[in-house]
Amino acid sequence: MEAPIVLKRRIRPEYVIVSLLLLIPMGVAIICFLPRYATFSAPGDIPSVQELGVNGSVRFCYVQEGVVHNLYERWSVKQAYPEAEFVSADSSAMEEMEEMMEIGESLRDETLLHAITTAEAAAEVALDEEERSSRLEELIELAGEYYGDSLGLMLAIGLFEESRNEDFSDGGRYVIAGTGTMEADHLVGSVGAIREKLLTAEKFGADYFFVPGDRDRFYYEGISNEEEALHWADELELSLEVVPVDTLEEAVDFLQKLKE
Amino acid sequence: MKKLYSEVLSNVFKILLTILVSLSAINLLSTVVYSVNETAYFDYAYELDSFVSLFGTVLFYIVLVVYLVWIYRIHMDLQSLFPFYSRSPGMALACNMIPIFNIYGIPSVFLRIGRQFDGTPSTSRQGQFIIGMVAPLILLYLLDNSVSRYLARLDTEPSATLLIVSGVLTTALYTCYLTLCVQISRALARSAQQAASPAPDLDAASGIAPERSAVPQHAYRLK
Picture 1: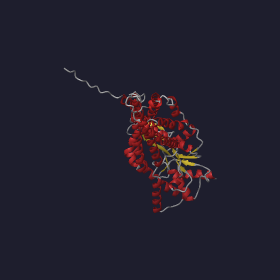
Picture 2: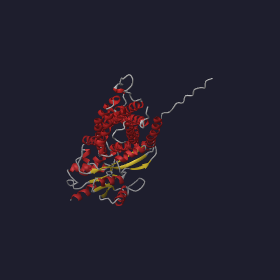
Picture 3: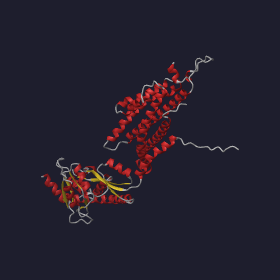
Picture 4: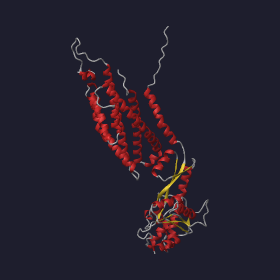
């Protein structure tokens, strides 16, 4: 009787080596793509109000904010914005961010309208309804890439300069930036990310930085914008001067005195 | 047949390079999608592209190490098959690794290998192919390096055209290495086969000399 022939299938060594080697990039990729949410903020820029079609010399300030899903995205953001700071978050962070952006868009449109009406009142110029709405549409279109309402104050100063044919920067001698909303009652409203905005303004050489003078009317948790800005300017030893203002008129007074 | 030092490693290198070429082709395709329709890229290709980029980057460094070992091993084979082969494995490694010198070193390594195979009838086709690949190889190597360095130094977002150019260069460079690997391992296998077959006996009773192509390389050298 013949013994049964047992066929042994030999695994080729190259396949074993390749499989083992491929485990390395696969492992790295899996670790880097595991969900690990974080929100980040990084310095942005201080663009001129001229980018919004306003013939003014002042600048508004924005910061970069967003959500990363995993380590790879975190690394990519760090490459793009080396000064970015991350705070761990959970999976709802993305939804919250989208919600915030939606709200931010409608708030931005509101502050644009308030900036127009406040500047009109301060410059003692009256636009008719049609002019006002066409200006608003133009501003909404040009401000489309920003969300949030913190450009209100600086836009109002820019519109004031345009109406009065002023140049508060004195031919570029001063770099004037700032943040704060423009409310319906013509007050300068509170905003977020004060520290990052101050760092951004400092980075781009701002001499004066307007913040909401909200020490006595801050309705949120924590310290007011005014206190926070003064604290960080001192703590970070910034060379710019923090200027808290309550209204557009206060800001304009300061700038007119500066020019004189 | 004589066992080659580089046999297993050549196969490993070929498989890894094939994967690397495929990954860089996927990256290139994603870049094209990005340039045509940014929204479609972020909706459908972004996650795959990111995964492939990361996987490819890590794999690239593994392939780099395997390449250096492969270069060393094929030179061990070349020296064992052709005792008068003039480049040592260490020197071949140095030619590939020393910065700036490798602009001369890399083409010179492959040119010498190509010429060696070209001089042997059974591997002359591979030899000529390898020699023909040297100029595109160094050209792609220099261009790909320059574009990558330029992209790394850019402060602003690079244009889609530049990204596509970089992707095309990288894919072409990897393909060039893969082709060289295939041709060299094929030529080495043929040479080893011939080395194992008996040397021609010119004093045989028939008096007929074997065809030129059938004569092993070492038999020529001993003449």
